[in-house]
Image 1 (cartoon, rainbow, N blue to C red):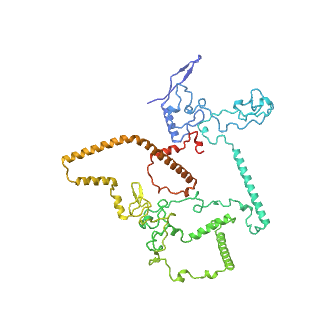
Image 2 (tube, helix red, strand yellow; image 1 turned 60 degrees about the horizontal axis):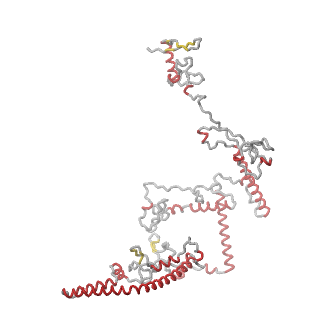
Image 3 (cartoon, one colour; image 1 turned 90 degrees about the vertical axis):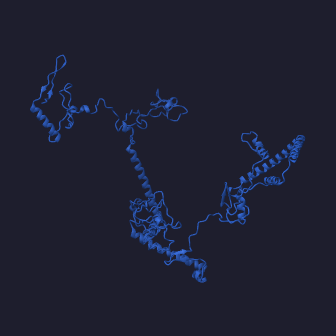
Length: 572
């Protein structure tokens, strides 16, 4: 059986610590100690208390809670050595400590002090650190206008949370000041509103009987839901949208009618506003789905929307009505408004007819009954739906479309080949050309040969068709060709010297003409640039060809360089 041992410490007069033999614990003491530990773990016995008066968890092992006997056996079990030590723990600034703002207002200095700022006279900084505007003559020399000293700031040592606290250094008195400011503005608004009402009463614009509510009911925050409800808001920035989800067992809207000309389906909002069965002649009341507009504008929905719109307009004009708060009052007001509106329209119509006449023309029957016929062809189904006629007008461009010119049967741009547009009817790439029909298509599709090359080929074919020559005739022809070549070379040598001067004169004439043409082009460009962009003529019909050497030389000579110092004198 294991027995626990206890040690005693003996201290000699010389101060030397000695260890005595540990005392043995009896079997009965050991059993009682174990039973007490079990009762503490079960909660039947009070927990053990350490030297600071704190309870020790009975489930903590003994080697953690007890102090070793060779260090200090007189100490009781404790957890102090497991907690942060005060002498080691870092000391941080408290939550109430912060930098002092402003300057010292208690003492007022009237004389310059040695060692203070030469600019403003404060003792807490030097001239190079002064934040005041530099004076023409500093306080050191004038001795007047001495600025008060700043507070001596504390050195804050903040912990992790203190460095990241966004409300650190916040003064609650600032919030009270803001609340008081808003309260003053509210009182001023109420005063102005009351004064306005008094002026209207004095001028006769507003009767005393119309003022049903007192000043307390005139608060702008009368309703908690004064802002528009979701779905009733005109402001698109705050509109709340709900996704239009469907049950997966239902037929999708775009599968109702596969005709591409049927109702348009918006895949983003999953909305199909029109009736998908409108072109089939089916009655909307008989189909399972007749479009979103059918459900939206059925029943009392339209009346509800009109009433809500009237409530908004009446509220903007000063009437205290609300669709959810006073539905009965709003309905009565709306009815009286419609009656008055109809009476006003009738009075206005009668007044115009009485002044100008022409009432007999308003009572005339419709044109269809007078002429007993119309040019509008309409075909109906047995359900009464329109099958043909009265169809929606096709949206057209503001530019002219399907304009055929020069006997063409297709428009310009209906054909594309090798990066050029043309006419599909004749494959012509010239915009103002006349149509040549199928003949033009055959000519454009065949490989055309230039005229000169065709003549050379014809001559070669004729030579091949001639009778075969003998060797003597072939030798004579060869000698004649060589003589002709030699004569041409001699003539070229004699005429080269004389032709050089002629070529130079021709080049000068060509360059002179190119310079004149370049001047005309520059003036034309300047005139076009002065016109408005919409009024400028088209340049797509001009012939495009590569410039000659003379034209390139004229362009280089006439070009204005920005870095040329004499560029400003060219036009003089």
